[in-house]
Image 1 (cartoon, rainbow over the protein chains, first blue to last red):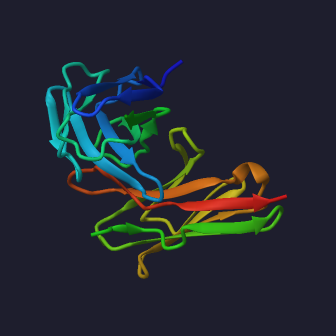
Image 2 (cartoon, each protein chain N blue to C red; image 1 turned 180 degrees about the vertical axis):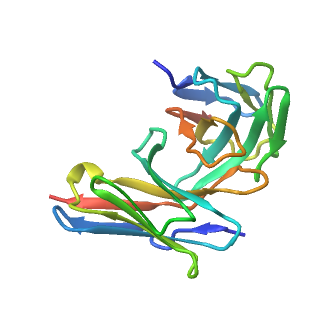
Length: 114
Length: 112
């Protein structure tokens, strides 16, 4: 089945540790995105990538890093510099970023800092 | 600066009646709009979209209306069902960057 897979679904991290969230898609999509959702808030863009080996900061990139070495994969690292990392993280992809199409989302990863 | 706004955080509707969810935008360059439905602890799922060359798009019980002069769109669900209870987000790709910009969402509760 084609889709976007995020893993793990739940993740616990100690303060001061980096953690990497996985996102893999087999939809052959060029564009991939990372969003963060906090209670009562919308989806805020962290990073996005329009093509392999290229990515841009979104609105709240501080304390996060990404890589796009393969078309299928867009991992997000939450670093110790991120002050409020506890949130629900969503990965998405779309056919290409410069077209009017929908984005498809994974099931999300809930990160909790303990 | 919130370019896509959903000013109603929540809405309750009786089963069988119409649900109307509203969304406003500020960027007149937006030319494509999407609605997503989201259940708790799950990713959003695409519901329906509309291009700026249209003022209406219909898919089963779901209809989206676009008023470009008012920079306003609305999602109508008729008839509403308890399974429609979820958070609904409107979104638009930002031309030039084409990153998707989302509203803050409206929580719909359909009462049986």
